[in-house]
Amino acid sequence: MKEYKYTINGEKYEVVINEVAETTANVTVNGTEYTVEWEKPEEKKPAVVVKPVVKPAAPAAAAAPAAAAAAPVNGHPIKTPLPGVIIDVKVNVGDTVTKGQTVVLLEAMKMENNINADRDGKVASISVAKGDTVADGAVLVVLE
Image 1: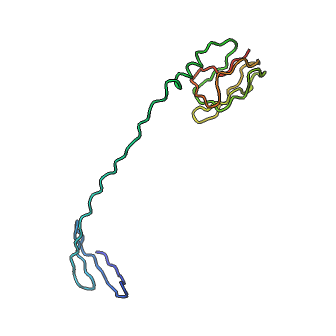
Image 2: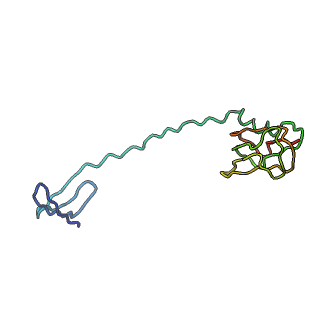
Image 3: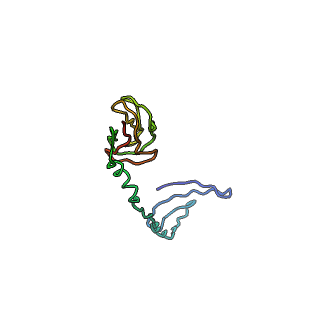
């Protein structure tokens, strides 16, 4: 049993809710009992969700990392130790690099990874560009 006090247009009402069923309630308003009925609300139908069809990546994009890894190499290759996306290429063809110098910045598993030269040398070729996706073991830079 719940009791409420209302004032409507300056008139006071004391309302006691005695019993509530599925679509009826027994209430007392200022000492007089009433049975209140209401319509059962319509059940809402679930909304139809349309999901877009996701097309697979173009075969050329998937083949690009494999092509870079399979390209013939004349010189000393610097390869990626894990798959990822090239964030930046820090060297140009013809640059002289020293062992430990960062040549490529790679994003893999939401982390930035410095790919460093493992020896001294001169950059003979660069196989990747900013934004490229590379597979594990792909050749990034070739040193003379």
